[in-house]
Length: 493
Image (cartoon, rainbow, N blue to C red; front, side, top):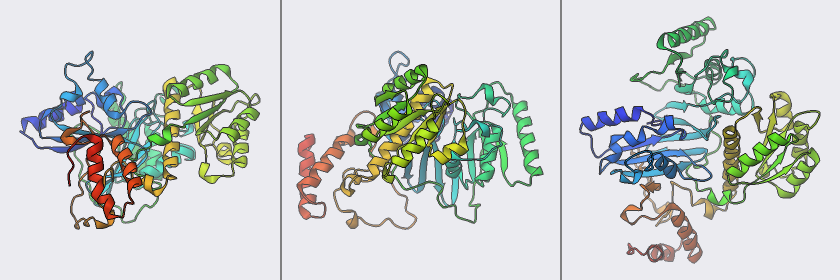
């Protein structure tokens, strides 16, 4: 299940009326705005003892996914708390990367929305489905379907490349978009352009504008299909609707390499790398600078502010921050030239610091030449600024985590939190066998069956590795005793 809005209630009633019990399911949440999670308190299978559910969503810099979901079921809003769910529920905080659910490879990427939002790419049995809802073009010039795809829009296109089915935000038309810029939603023209460039087979338009009725939607789809036929495009387009079922079979004969960069485990513990985050803000405009300073501080990140380019370069050279936010408003301040100078003075390619440019409009060509990472276009909301900061802070934390020692990389969330034998001794999974999802998420806010929290498991794992090398028999013999002693539970020998 992708997201859990009001439709979750209906699905839950269907399952309950059918007498379904002992269910094991997975819910992928793009973000925690209420229209995407408000079905959870009414999803009946979560309240059935014996059912097991894994809920996945974007990791934040403060509250966990479970804490955010519990917030909408607080006493002031709802008569039942999340802890009263009878099912065994595990919560998984995700960053950008990949993980597996049984034999399905799931890849995640941040979208462009006024809340930290993940797109999901699911690959199984030679078929790829991508869900990218609540996403806005990074470059405004692409809203009408024209212009060159570059920068973060190009990365988004790579993420959806070769999809047999793309479910993509298309709330507005190009004509409507200028009045809706910054609201976090795409245009139909943008979704179609990227789908064509990315060789998508089917495009399901979704997140329909509430002011548009069915007849208006049908006219938009018919017009889009006519344009595609005129240009001899093989792309199939339709408007997503409730109850619509699609059969997908392996359709692409060629492989699409590089759709998702790297193989970073999306459930990796990156908290250690989040403790030293810092941001340098180089803004001449006092009002804009104050708004950004407040946005960074609201995320709990240390910020330093300066109002001229020379001071910004000096701060960056001395402090090596996690992120730089620079204003481009010539002639008072030329953020692009400042960015270019920063790239020239940065001799460490591994510390490729993200640089976000704040401007009234994008200059993509100069931005690429100067080494700009991303743009924040004025006017912007506090929510958009915070989300931009949060996304790049988490990306920086992931990059720092990649550089950890092999021992620390064993702490990947969702793979080997508490191994009790060397990986080389584990039996190989049989061909075609389904891979169980590791029960490493936080379960219902409790630690059932004597399980311990992931954070404590990580600390114990590091401690055990110091006591004895992983490969030695003494490690395998002592680990049960060590964990039992630390958690006051009987040792399992």
